[in-house]
Length: 387
Figure 1 (tube, rainbow, N blue to C red):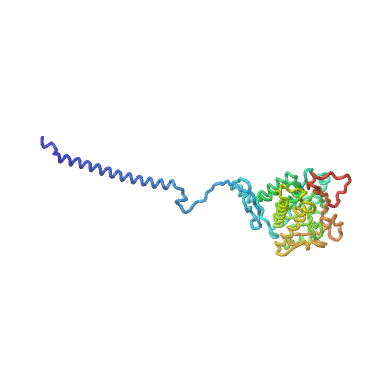
Figure 2: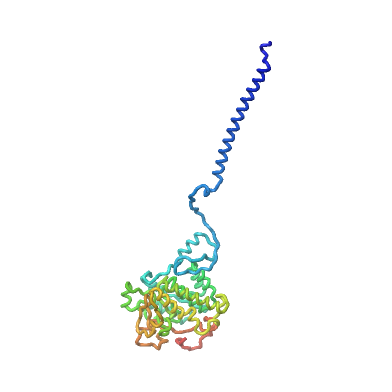
C-alpha cells in the first residue's frame, strides 16, 4: 500500500511539470495570435488607403465633370479656337468638347476656301417682306438660279446667333441685348459674313448683273496667285464701303476684326451714356454716328486696319479715292462707286457696269432705329430717293 502512494515531493513535481507544459502552450498560442493580428493589420492598411498614396503613377480617371462658369469671354487673335474665359452655363465636359468643335478658327488670306458660298442673306423686320421687296428678291434668284436664299426674321436671327456664336458668349450676349433694330441688323450682317459667308444684301437692293460677273475676268483667272476673299463697293469715294451689299468667304480674320471693332464701339457708347448695352437707344447715337458704331464706317475702318495688319503695310481711305475700275487691296476687291452705288453717284458712265441698285428706303432713320418707328410712305413716293 505504501508503495502505491506517491510521495508529496513527487506529487509537487508532477504539478509543476503540468503547469510548465500548459504555460508553454499558452505562450506559443499568444505568439501565433500576435502574428495573425500583424498580418491582418498590414492587410487592412493596404486595402483601405487610396491608391494615390501608395503608387507614384496615377491612372487618369474617365469621369464626367460638371462645372459652373461665368460669361466674360473675349476671343483674342492668339486664342482662335476656344474662348479665353469660361462660358455662362452649367455644362458637362462633353458639352465643352462640342462647343470647341463649333468655334471658328479665323483664316488669313491664303487660308480661305477657294470659292464664295453661293448663298444670299436677307433680313426682314416685324412688318415682314413687302410685295416690292419680294419682287426684288425674285430678281436675285432669277439672276442667280444656282444660289440658295435665306431670309431671317427677328426671331430666327436671334436663334441663328445663338447657334453660331454659343462658343463666343460675349458676342452672343451683346447681340441679344441690343434693342435698337438698326444696330442689331448691322451687327447681324458681320456675324453672318464671318460664320457662313456668302452675300449679304438689304431688302431694298436689286441685283442687276449675275454674281458670277461681279469679279472682272482678268482678276478671277488669277486668284491662285492673288486670292479674292471679300468684294465691297464704294458708297462715298474715299469715305467708306457700302454695307447694303457685301460678299465674303467665311471665317476670315478680316470679319473677326470687324466683330471686335463693333463690340468695342458698342461698349464705348454704353459707357459714355452710363447704361448697359441693353440701355442704348437710337437717340443716344445721333446723326450719322450709327454708321460709325455698327454700320459702313465701322466696317470700313475695321477692314482697312485688319488688311494693314495682315499685309504689314498701311492701307487707308486714301486708297479708295478716285476709283474708275476695280482695285485689289490685298485680298479685298474694291469696286468703284458705279458698281453698288450708281444711283448715289449719279450713274457714272466711266466706272464699269452697274452691278446692283440700292433704293435707299432708309427705314431705320427714325427715333426707334427701325421700320416700326416709320410712318407708311406716301402714295407714289419715289422708292429711289436718296437716304
